[in-house]
Image 1 (cartoon, rainbow, N blue to C red):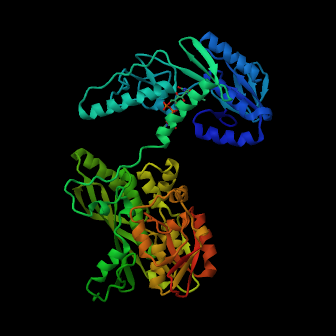
Image 2: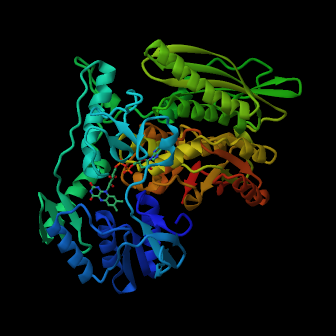
Image 3: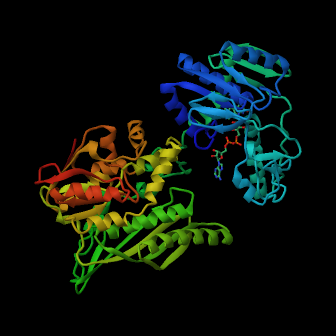
Length: 593
Ligand SMILES: Cc1cc2nc3c(=O)[nH]c(=O)nc-3n(C[C@H](O)[C@H](O)[C@H](O)COP(=O)(O)OP(=O)(O)OC[C@H]3O[C@@H](n4cnc5c(N)ncnc54)[C@H](O)[C@@H]3O)c2cc1C
């Protein structure tokens, strides 16, 4: 079965396989003749029409546990739809084009779907918890019998006090009790008991827009029942797909004039979206006393300071991120990689890091746990790059903020100002982080898109930096000011302009659709205003000003070498691209089309 069949759950892989199969069609075998298998068989028969046939294979008798009238009606419906039944038939082998039964007969099946009832996940057996038929035995408060600090609900649980079949109708009603009981454990309140309903409405879809309702040994079939089922299902899914809109920041009583405008209509973004705008920063830096030290080679505004010691240059940079994710270890990993971006962007090899951590106020045991997670994750990142965490500073504060000051060494630093006329502009990572995170905060982003993005942000770009360093004329990393901001800074420092091919810019999955829906990070308006740029007013254009966290390296590379370098970086597993080129200075610093 594992080689050729597909289980009806989890739904993701099944839906993918079914979508592909539907195009060609063919004979289908559904293994398991319970309500789920029968419902699935009818839906597939309806969808396939003349493009396929469906056979239900059942080890005993189909549709046990239903009232006699409902069973009779469903059997008649199966017959009317031309769905074949094989009862008292045990499957012994599932092949690519047929299923073999215990008695040696074979049934043609280009697609074999498993719907033979819920099966416990094998890992449950390794938990050491008391199990019943492989499921975690729980008490009336949904706590595992062996360890009351562990709760189990839904299909993975066996209700010792009131055993029930595995069905979503029970799972969904256990959820509020579970939430209450976990809160009760934390607050000292009384836990609730869960008592499953003895009768519940079964609405079986008949494939086409009609359904059969079954409760209290009665049944009726109608198109209305289908509308009813459809409405219940959609209402439930909408609660997951259309979460409530994000609250606007609360304005304190007696707030000064203009505070509402300053706070804006939504909470402050985390990570690089919380950065201070580029022009404010430039003004502040402009007010600094002029540099006097002879061993300091860079001007403020580059990725890192460069200090010369004989023939060696030491680069020095500091970064910190407001937490945008509730997992300290994920935050630590991303912040460490984000900080290292400045060392890599200077073509330097990471050396040491100093940590600055503000933990939210919490119990000492939790402080210890969070610190261990943060230092563990960050330590791993730095160690993999040959760098050590040499010290740091930790405080308690209003929220989690993690920062790292990092140093690195290099013979020759890749500064912002080395780009040459005609150089290709290479980017090593998709953009769209700020948009996805702003949407995530507003519960508008797709979980898969956010998960894929986080996975990328937790990946080191050290290997890409080592590939770029020997050939880059100038390099930076894309962070808070967005791709346009950082590219324009490079162009300005090199006294050039830059042209960006919008279609060539890699985007994180989901970012363009969210940008089209108007999602913007808090710092977006400041980023847009800071760059003298000609950019189309499109979602892709908007993403050029999207702040990035642990963003890609942006390098000016001689045109002739660019294509090979991109191939080399892609081979390392990164999504790199040539996204534009530097041109002689024009009135506009950055042009995108
Ligand atoms: C075709 C079909 C039709 C059905 N129709 C109905 C119906 O009409 N009405 C009804 O009441 N019930 C129905 N059911 C049953 C219903 O789907 C289940 O009872 C219900 O989904 C159980 O919910 P659950 O959250 O416990 O488990 P699931 O929905 O199975 O969710 C468990 C989740 O845990 C994840 N997981 C597993 N291991 C790990 C791990 N180690 N770490 C992290 N995550 C993990 C899984 O990937 C999965 O996403 C149907 C089932 C099938 C197959």
